[in-house]
Length: 103
Image: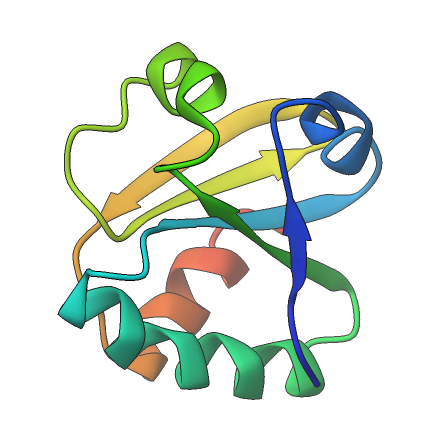
């Protein structure tokens, strides 16, 4: 399942309900491409979490608002509130634990 792309215009709406993990990435980023299939797998396994992608090259307003300086960065929201941030290409078990620690 392809992850939903979000942008500056719809960001607040997309993170407003439930648990949402936002993958801040860019096409030129090798580690981002390594994490993408892992997030795709997790989106199929974890039905209670929405996983979305934000391309920081095209959505600099949101990236700046959340202080994104390194990618990939994972932002975890609960009902629109940022609860945690993880930076780097983490392995699947670590990303899953990151999400589950905030349920």
